Image (cartoon, rainbow, N blue to C red; front, side, top):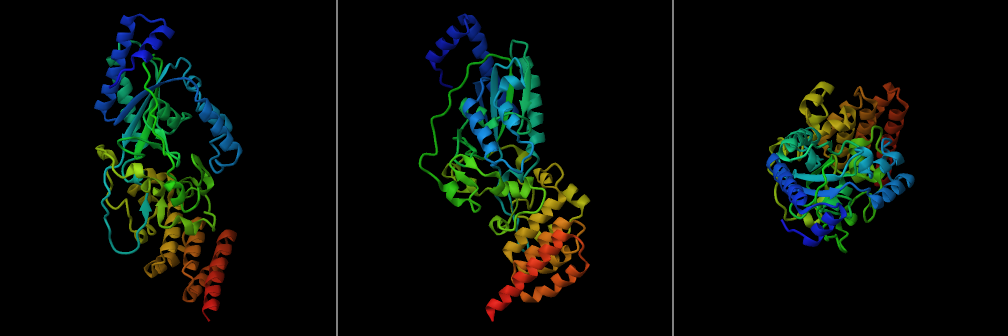
Length: 406
């Protein structure tokens, strides 16, 4: 670890500390980083608890511009709060910024029939629960490790804390143009966590790396969700559409989703920083069998209870049962494997109207007139207005295709 002697002198002077006090404090900092590493975190950095003023301004502007629409909980008030650590903990002095790599395995478990894609972060256990437990252990041991009475508050992407701003200012990584934090050793394949504490600690410097002129992530996004460097239109992001969105996926967006059924890694897959990176070792994030490229047809036959059991302790539960089957229908409609037609036809009678409507779209996306009778049969008994409209559109799409071929 490199020591900036000028920063040390400035810190002692500003805080009116004696050399003995500083030695004690710096020893705490070293112990903190060693402890976090022993518990399993891959990167540990420290920053102060000052407001993230630049990040606050940009966050508020995104909310006002409608770029965060679809996330009702992400309000202007929350955007402001998340950038003021001292509002989250009154006597906050420092933030311990941590990261853990989830890039463990890329082995495909392929079987028969069409396959979908799941974002890599969801291949293993739910990171919220795993990391929260790690942080609780860290905080408990921290009290034994340092020579001071401490207060802490922990965050794992589930509270009003700007994780990325803290990670950037601490030197844990730098902002990528796709808004992910990029690290030197693990690229963007990391989960972030923060511990706000009342301990006064020597802070780390931000890294000087940037994305330079590279715009590969922007060019690769099929929905053009990265509307400008460092700015994402939430409504266009495949991750939002397949996870957070609770209703129907806009028809114009469905073909652009491709075969993604939960999340999306396209902007990370093309990032040059992610090409040669260290692999993570935490077994909780190791890929569950078949999670990277799941067989889609069997998923359509899951009941609610089977869905809950299959994805127990998995981030995929965030999409909910009906939302996940909706996503599978869209993927099947984009893949256009004839093997899926009987399954999609069965889904026209699913208990969930959201599934029925997207199954109709999927069948219509095949543009085959011989599937029209199945759509017409389902239409006769359908009572939901949205599903009726989707079935009619699917029939029209197939009819139009037939006319253009004559």
